[in-house]
Length: 365
Image (cartoon, rainbow, N blue to C red; front, side, top):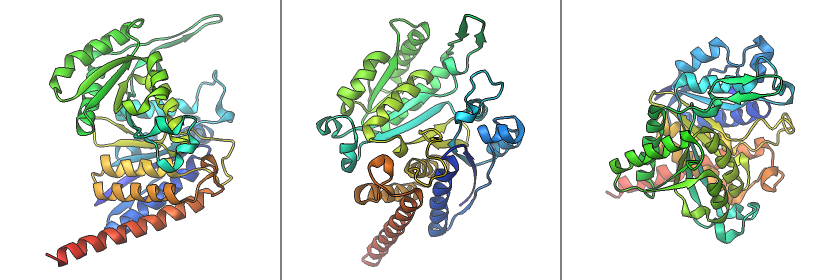
């Protein structure tokens, strides 16, 4: 397969973790005889520094013409002035809207070897396997904004079509998993949430084999920490999804572990670790690259439809989580390069073992 994967390393540790993910994708291409290209473009703070625009036209054009986009992180203290005309996060929001990637998938599993890194008791972590589906291009983040001397406002709008498309995506994902969907809103207060809940209720009969429940966002914040294993697929709007999925990341032991995929109805998906730019450790070679590497696995699965390759990457990461080495955020001392090298070795072993198995299976008839 030939694929053009645009890379947007961005700011802080973004270039470090993105480079690690690209190394893994190059290894996949070599082993499975694919031809991947990795053109690199600017986004975020570094793009502001270079030309004043957090999403240059050349970057957007390249992303629109790609098969997939791999992002690092954007932002940092040097661009943190909220009154600045151009801010790094604006580039990311504009890119999501331009690509029409309305469904943000954030899978979360608690690896047994890392249960001690979670603030929760191990008994509550057994069997935790969540998939957040966050609506990504509507709500307060994209509404009209005003700011005066003593007041400010953020328009909070959702249209039925925006809700329908992400909810149907969540139902389909739930049907392929454990057939349980939790919809999160604030329907006791917000009119947008009442529209959200009524839309979910109207769509639910289309998926009779999926059990649906509704939770208010404040209750859900508590339940994620008290009974996380109860949940399967969780669908919610943009602001709630951002907060809840970051809260749930504590279950896994580190933000550095968690990937995401942003998908729409088009062919181009946007993939990134959920952590930020971590400017305090940028350039020190200690950033955990596993969230970015697992985002690359999601890229292989959802944009390139290469399931065996995605499984190989995930198996390699699982091996490293089980046997080490570990980065500082996971209680170890290994740097980015050491973690990457361990993943590449585990990937080589997984592929060799898999090929040997299937070769022997064919030989045995």
